[in-house]
Length: 152
Image 1 (cartoon, rainbow, N blue to C red):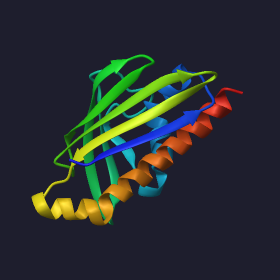
Image 2: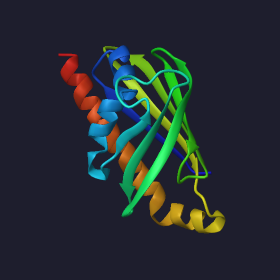
Image 3: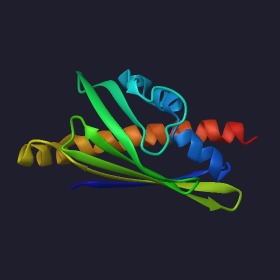
């Protein structure tokens, strides 16, 4: 099971960063290059504990649907979203927030299992892990930009 760990320092209050990270609307902005949009469940605003969202996006030239649910949340420290259904065999994305001086350390821990056994493992090594890291980095950049603008 591949694990992606990323850390982003953001010059903004932890509560602001936490809320932006769970914003359906900001997520759609950060994934505009994949035409990702919320089509069912919570489709705008801030997603809360036990709520789910179904995303539609185009990845690798294929329109895909992914349903995820917020399975744990403690404001403003962390929340967890887990795949209910979608292209992966499974995934769990932990979002952690720690106040660091006048800023926030936002950490992502993304555990996933690709479908198709050995073929999925080969895909991870060849391109999927890099693709997922890039999606998360773009998302984090958008969160950082918006948070730091709000924090002025």
